[in-house]
Amino acid sequence: MRVLLLAGGKSPEHEVSLVSARGVLEHIPFPTELAVIAKDGRWLLGEEARRALEAGLAPTGPHPFPPPLDWGRYDVVFPLLHGPFGEDGTVQGFLELLGKPYVGAGVAASALCMDKDLSKRVLQQAGLPVVPWVALYRGETPLIPFEPPYFVKPANTGSSIGVRRAEDYGELEEALAEAFRYDRKAVVEKALGGVRELEVGVLGNVFGQASPVGEIRYQAPFYDYETKYTPGRAELLIPAPLDPGTAETIQEMALKAYRVLGIRGMARVDFFLAEGEVYLNEVNTIPGFTPTSMYPRLFQAGGVSYPELLRRLLELALQP
Image (cartoon, rainbow, N blue to C red; front, side, top):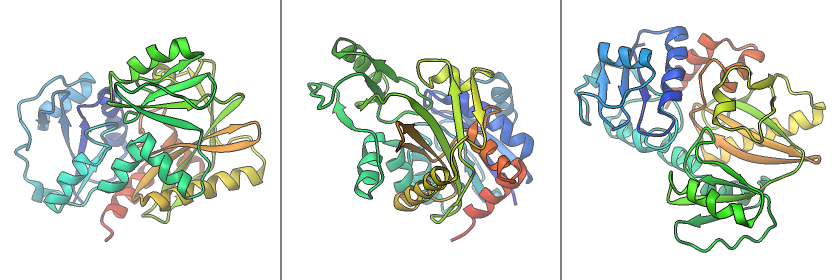
């Protein structure tokens, strides 16, 4: 099997993608070539891509889209592109037009999971509990039917980029302005008290296998970008200290969400546990593969090594 790994991308998570790609290249059990998408959307190939990976940043590249690649060389493509223009169905649509198998969710599931508002609507309709929220487009008057504090998020970003906590209505406007820097739509969620953050990895095509439940603990006001990607800022507990019934319920909810959203390949499903109630927070169709990332560590705790996890993802991509 010959693999093409896509990393970088135009999103604010460009640097995270490159760190994830370094981890994958160290462990992937098949011959793999690298292409890096620069922040301006141009592509780097071959040695230029490797140098960008080592530098951890690619502001621009020599090749406009579409890149001069011999796509017939590759059996499968692994898009390791976090956030917009990579995790939202755009690259997936291009690969569908090429007729090239790829790792991860398809066009519709990718787009749906990327949009925090739309995915919440589908999950709520399926009977899965989600945190109360309101979606706002740029220019709309924020009429919020629940009391502060709030979490304000761009609807289509990951890694907590653009996320702010607003303690009162006075801070809401500033938080919305920050969210609208990244997206035309924002999500305002009710901030829950006494929250524990729990995560489950899922592996499979629509009908998946759930990993053990993990818990994230940290000292920051919330699980922000710096806390996620700075070693030592967060403590990961796998398995999470939960009673067996609660852990099983969370795994079952993760698998139901995975099927309802029609996801292939992989996802990390994030939950809140607040005052005894479980809420599904969001679903990530291209979870991180950095040294601090939860997804591979969850499966390692379940007996699936990093190379074996990658092998299974590539084999799932080749299934009809």
